[in-house]
Image 1: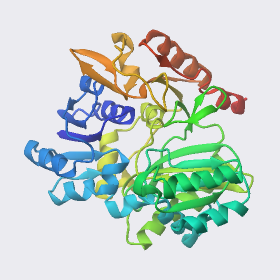
Image 2: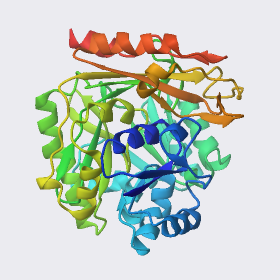
Image 3: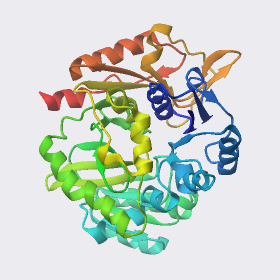
Image 4: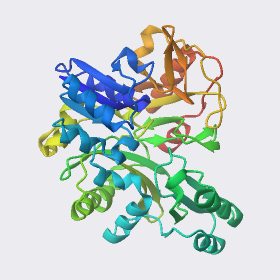
Length: 421
C-alpha cells in the first residue's frame, strides 16, 4: 500500500513510525514532512494547506490511503478534496472539523446538547466584549474563535489583562481573522486531562489518557507553548472518571455532531478538566494532539492502519483497539527562546541506537545533516512498566542528544508522579 500523511511535526513522525509496523505498507509519503521524518518516509515539499497540490500528488502517485493529521488542512477541507478523487482518508470532513475550527461553534454545541463545559459568552463587537470583561469574575479566559496555532487562549488574571486580551484579538488582529469573534469563558480549576479517541461516527474507542505540560519553564512557569512534554496514562483519569466522560461527554458529543449533520470520523481530541463538579470540556481538537500522540501511540498494541481504516469504513465497533498496560514519557527538546524567537540551523546529534525513540518536529536536512529549524525540535520518548522508570528513561535519552541552544523542562512527569503516590 501507498500511504500519504499530511503534516510536518513530531505528531506526524509518531504516526508514520506506527503505520510502518503494518506489513502491507510499501511507501509512506509525508507532505511536507521534515528532516527527521525523512528517515522513515518520502518527504515531498508540498505545504499542508496546499489542498490542490496534495490532491494532485495523491492522484498522480496512486495513493491508497491518506492521513490528514493537522488542523488547518482538515478545516480547509483536505479530506473532502481527497475523497472526491476516490482516495479514502483518516480525518473528518470540513463540516465536522469545525468542532476545532470554531470555538464559538463548539461552545454552542455543548450548550445546546447539555455537554458539561465552562460558562461563557461570545462576542463579535469589541465594545460589547470590553464592557462584559470589565465586570466578569477574574481570572477569566479569553479565546479567539478560530485556529491560532494553539496560542489563541489567554488566561486574564485582572480586568485590565482581560481588556488587553480582547483588544489584541479583536482590534489589533493578533490572530488575524481567528480573533474576529471571541469567547469569554469561566475560569475552571482542577487537573487537566487529554483523551484522544478513535471514532467512526457511531462507535467511540478512547485511547490511553495523557497529561500535557504547556508552560515553557519548570514548575509550570513561563509562557504557554505547544507542549513541552507529556506522560501517559494520566493518574487523575481514574476508571470512574473515564466512565463518566464516556456517558456525559464522549457519546453525547458524537451524537450531537450526528444530529447537526456533521458526522465526525477520525480522531477526536477531548481536552478535559476534572473540576470539583466533575469532568468538563475545555476544548475539542479535530485530530491527534501534539505532543500527546508521542506518548499514546507507542503504547498502542493494535494495528494503527487497520483502526484508521475502520473509522473510515464504519467498522470500528468490531476492530481491536488495545493499549499496553505500561507508562510513557515524552520530553520535548526545544530551541532556546521558544516560544518567542530563536535561532535555527544548529546541527542535531542523535545516536543511531536511540533513533527509534526520537520523534522529530522542527528539523531540516542541510548538506546531509539534520539541523534545527523550529521551536520544538524533537521529543525523546521512553515506555516502561512504571511511570517513574518511563520518566527516568526519557531524560536518559535527552542526555544522549545534543544541539546548540537546546533547552527542555527538567520536571516532566513530576506532577503525575506526585498524584500517583
